[in-house]
Structures are given as C-alpha cells and as structure tokens.
Amino acid sequence: MIPELLVSDLDASLDFWCGPLGFRIRYERMDEGFARLERDGADVMLEQRDPGRRNWLTAELERPFGRGINFEIAIGKIDPVAAQLQAIGWPIFMQPEEKWYRAGNIEIGQRQFLVQDPDGYLLRLIEWIGERPSQNSRGGA
Image (cartoon, rainbow, N blue to C red; front, side, top):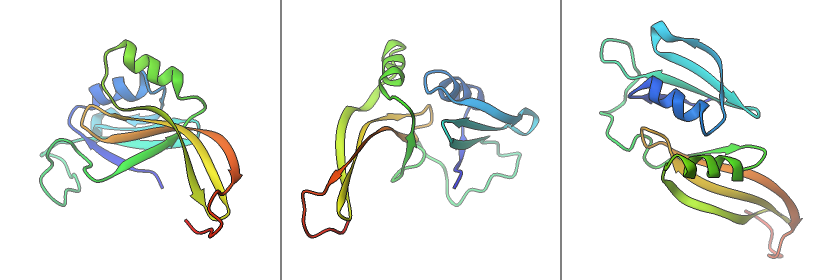
C-alpha cells in the first residue's frame, strides 16, 4: 500500500520529508503538483491541494490533516532523524520510546517516536529491535 497525501504546500512538504526525514524523490510531476518519495522501502506520494485540479476529497480538509490515522514508517535508526528534527526546532509529538507489541506467541520490539508533518499528518517512525517470546501465554494479538 502506498499512501497519497493531499498537502497544502508541496514545496514545504518536500523540504520536510526529504530534509530531516531522509526521503528522496523517486519521481515528480511538478506541473501537476505531485511527487513520489521513498526511504528504506517505504513509499509515499504527495499531491498539492488545488481547487482547480481534480483532488479526491470526501469532505472539507481541516488541519490537522489525517485525523485518526498514523503512518508507521520503518527506517534503519530513529535517533538521527529525531535529532535532526530537534536541531531545527520541529516539535516531536511523542518522544522516542521502546515498545514491545504482542503478536501471537511472540513480542515484536521497536523503538519509535511520532512527529507531525507540515499539514499535521501523524508519522510514527520505527526501528525494529527484535523478537522475544510472549509474556502472555494466551497468544493472540
């Protein structure tokens, strides 16, 4: 699945996604206000919101965009990204933490933090730290 996010300012979004988040432009159609980005196997598409173009809106967009969803993005290491965001004064929504999630008979470990992009989309950047036997003998998720 590759999410396509409607953004209010494509240039500002590209500065954020390709700056401290470390994505690169895979391809772009700037005349259409569109760019596809990638990093470590994660892809995202950004589309400039424009009332003069065909944007697929189901309701009026209000900030923060993407309410009720967060996008988990697996990257190699989260600390350098968190440090770059802090260095430029970008607010961190949730500080880095270690979290273990039960998945059947194992627990999956990750370090994670959350940040909002320029339009308020909530991004959860994670770094995988391993697996261990589940502490709950019932299994299930």
